[in-house]
Length: 70
Image (cartoon, rainbow, N blue to C red):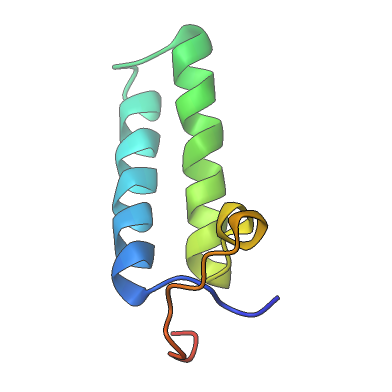
């Protein structure tokens, strides 16, 4: 897996993951929506640390313009 995400994209995903975790664990969201956002937050968190987005890969996006993984 070669990184295919920009550093700024990774920061944005990390912020959303943290937001989803905080909302879920502070009981501001619950039920199916809470579970879905928690799962999405986990996916964003994993994408952030690998620098690889499977959706970008499937669609053929290579937006890192030759940047090394950070």
